[in-house]
Length: 128
View (cartoon, rainbow, N blue to C red):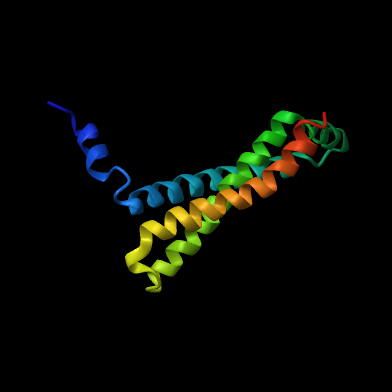
């Protein structure tokens, strides 16, 4: 006898892309909300010139640059999936949600991500 989680995975396995899109939209939204609070907190703490100089050194580190690449991925996924959801809500592509998610949000998103991530990686991570 299989458990409920295994049955759910089998039942919804990529057939219902709306569930995957929902999870992606919520996860990226929460990630961006966390980033926004972290960003505002960091800006608030940089009033002292010495702290500002220390922060600039930290912002140039390869680990921080990798985090920026992750932020780029999060913004692209959230934006393109949001556009797709808006189109579906307006009635455009109601019957093609799965195709729109995989080709528009994921496919075009991957191309945009690669176009942005490669220069960021080359100049931010490998340049050190």
